[in-house]
Image 1 (cartoon, rainbow, N blue to C red):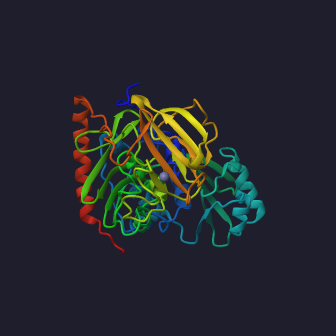
Image 2: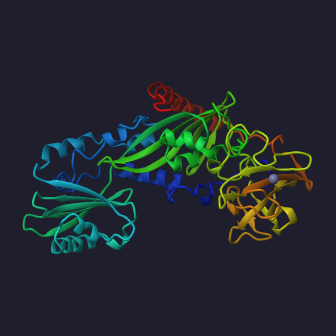
Image 3: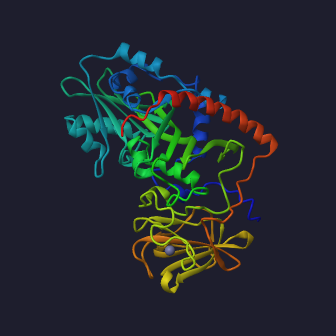
Length: 466
Ligand SMILES: [Zn+2]
């Protein structure tokens, strides 16, 4: 394999923050599935939905955030998947029963469905019968922490019904029928895709600025990931730099945010240089980020082989948090909390793993093209990473520590060629692979659509707080 043509899909290990196994492929598949179902599936029982949901619950909770949202579909495939929630809400308003009480409960550690139901004042017998009905479709043992349960009670605390969504696309209802017994049924969940946009100016760290603008951790992790080939997050982030990110949210008919989807656009402005990236699906399931000219953000080696969002850097330390690259010190250091995962900078084979004098716990990886990368002062190695192990770019190989001669927890990172260290700060990294002509034409169309959407979002978004 050529050093210049690394083609691989995203490793799971890359996105360890907040991404709960819901990769782009699954989103794409799921959206496709909804697309197929739309129109074919109505509510099997409109009354029951209205009996269980409150018009007060939903949508504006999301809209009230300082970020702006837009519902513009970006392409036709996705457009077919979008169902406006307005119709459903309308039905709910019309058929809402005034003497009902709605409760939305979030599953916490140690909860059972029974304990949750009892906590709302439902008597044990009723809870028992409702759970028995539910069991025909769903095992309550499968409840996850964080899952939400919608419960509807009459004014005298009798259970009318409940609803839970065991997966992004499935909703299960239990409803009391006229005879007083409970029955369960399920529906496909209708999801609306919203584009959310955030931007911020970095005043102390990227992490803090992103939190201030309410960028979810999973989105921040993705933002950092897609720039990790190009940006040294320890040395290149300066006060006054900026970021923009547009990402998808999937919202169900109750206004619950189901999932943060993909980042569709990002821009980092570093020392006045603007670096926009656009999401593009090169082939089904193969999603990458490209600059305006259609060059992939991917490079053979990462500049930041660690989760850049967790770097404990303060801005402005261009040279080094610990030492930086000098004649004596032939590498760059990333100061990060102990235990922060360290990623393989590129695809390769582990050529050394063990203690190495002042370097402490040390791993070296041999890549194509005569390059190697090295990682020192680890607290521990990732299980299964040993001499001769084949690793993928972005795969976790170990964790930040302070072993060997080290003044504090940090990753010491070296790039070597011909067995000699080269300066990772100045090494000429080959630029990303450019799309071929056919894909480039498709990309330019897609990019123009994203750019239009972003222009609109930029107009309506202000940075609200300092
Ligand atoms: Zn060092």
